[in-house]
Amino acid sequence: MQLLDIERRSDINAAVAVGQPGSGAARRVFIETYGCQMNVSDTELMMGVLKKAGFRRALALEDADVVLLNTCAIRERAEERVVGRLSQLSRVKRARPDLVLGVSGCMAKHLAEQLLDRLPYVDLVVGPDSYRRLPELIGEAAGNPALDVRLDRGEDYLELDPVRQEGTNAWITIMRGCDKFCTFCIVPYVRGRERSVPAGDLLRQVRLAASEGFQEVTLLGQTVNSYHDGESDFADLLKMVARVEGIRRIRFTSPHPSDFSDKLIGTIAEESKICRFIHLPVQSGSDRVLEAMKRTYSSGRYVDLVDRLRSAVPGLCLSTDVIVGFPGEDDSDFESTMALMRHVRYDSAFMFKYSPRKGTVAYREIPDTVPETEKSRRLQAVIAQQTGISGEINRRYVGRMQEVLVEGDARRGKGQAVGKSDGFKTVVFPRDGIRTNTFVDIRITDATSHTLIGRPEN
Image: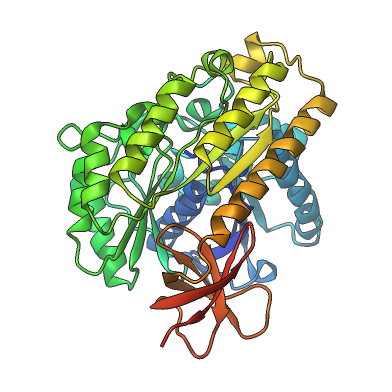
């Protein structure tokens, strides 16, 4: 869900925090978030749980009594980065023995006891279904290491309100877990089986987000369009969210290509609040590789879906996920992926070389046959091709107007602001006193493969 994961998103290292009153000063918590939007949403959920229990925010890591790393397990590199960060924090722990140092999220579930054995300075390991117990577990960890990574098919965190970070978008997790079991993916094993949050509670969360000033919401799920709470499917939910006053934009990620119904496509076309952007993971353009991945669709069915979506939603922007070097992928399989990408012409793509993940079907049953040097060559080739396509598409926006939701100051360029268009294009323009979380019309004057550049239109 997507996964929303570290391999498909630039690293999200959001630091947030919250503390618990005891005999004296309230305990202060600092959370670092790694990986995907789902992890950002889970961090906000943990913040809500902790705040309700009386914890308070630490403005900096140095001020915290508890430090949590909320982690991703999609790729081995993600876990290596977290282990490296924990090693750095061990020095803080040695200087302050009373500090509680913990790991939460997918990596916590994936490695579980190994973390406590390998990193003896870690006090707490908590999985994605155990956040209700977080205050209790922090208390236990002050004496002995605490571990709870049990999966719970009944846990959907009903009636728990997140404490959201400041920003323009509210993440709302509509379902947890996954039932697809793609052979390369660890998600079903670390987040459990699929379950949907009742629509009524989701609408309450959307209304709360609107009351907090958020004008854009993103609905999250591992395969978000397979949502069904027993009464309402994903198309029904989108229509209900579109009726919430104060919400101007609705996004969702990540859908699975096999779960797009005609009803859903029609809803996306009909509802003006639903953004004209879809992240549609393809993974490979080879039918043989798709079958080995257990993706449940062929390249032909995928392209047909793209055609139906673009026919129903003119101007639709698309992004995707691509894995190169999957076991058994030969030159013809790789060329099929390159050809599909040339045909579809994605606005952007997240491209990675295959790395086996312990615990997956591919790790157990499919030998990793493609040499690393060949994986790297294929990755560079697909990145170069996509960069060219993205640049060609973006240059077509020059001279056009884009309505942009202002996110804040641009990272580069003094006096520049950055925001997102309806089609999820990153747009940079002069700040000129424009406030964050407002909509502004921008005339596009230049473009790169990754960014549109423009000026406010009076």
